[in-house]
Image (tube, rainbow, N blue to C red; front, side):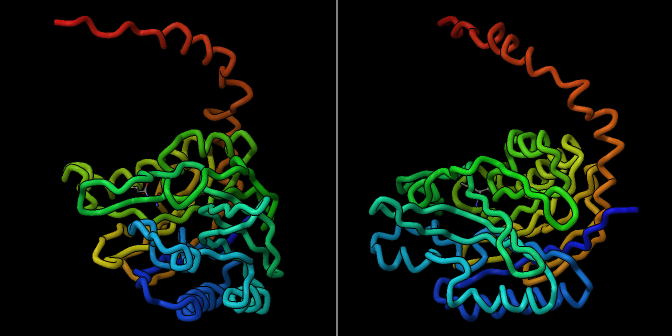
Length: 313
Ligand code: CDT
């Protein structure tokens, strides 16, 4: 019998700096209800889906900064999302800024959770690849994730959920082959990932112009090379003066995009995903046990890694 997940990717348009949590949760609820109306098992929301992308500002005031983080999940303001998901019998993944106090020290992570149809958190991931910088740069836009988050300390776990093996990663993680491969080696069948990808921060125009191409390139390659579905969900549009790409999409284990958003706003796309679609790839071209040669990779690095520096002209 085919193992199918009907998944929704719920893209969000911009969230204003002053938009309060209850208003954002109302938007999430509308998207959740729309997905449930389509009979979805699961809806994936973006990275930092409860707030504006606050690492664009060098926030100095600690109380102001803390207000962008969740100290409990669910907390009083996010509880309605869990209750409604349970009532409708739909799961979800959600990206948010997490603040925990450990040993009297505040720890901050860029996190996402996987919630089952009964409203229970069954998986949690903390972003590993934090892009940008900790110090303010001389350029039009900042990306201060290294200042406001620690590197995630959970690795790339996968979970048995929704009748398959699911994993999560967050935004910049999608550009690194290791992200997918670590999950691929654990048999992942669907990767849920949210992103906020700005253009116009001051990179050369050539890079910004290719950003939509690179966005799909990395997710399609990750899907194909690991025979997994990938659900990539954007927070899109012009947020506080900065343009963020959209292109929310659902990618099959073949690497093909099978559904894609057409706007830069709140929008739901849906696809029935056959989790067994990756099986022929895993049985042949990407049969890791038969064809991968990890015992040689170290040797290759050893032999080629010590390239002498270029000679002075
Ligand atoms: N949120 C996130 O990880 N964004 C990065 C852009 C970094 S630009 C300095 C991305 O990889 O899309």
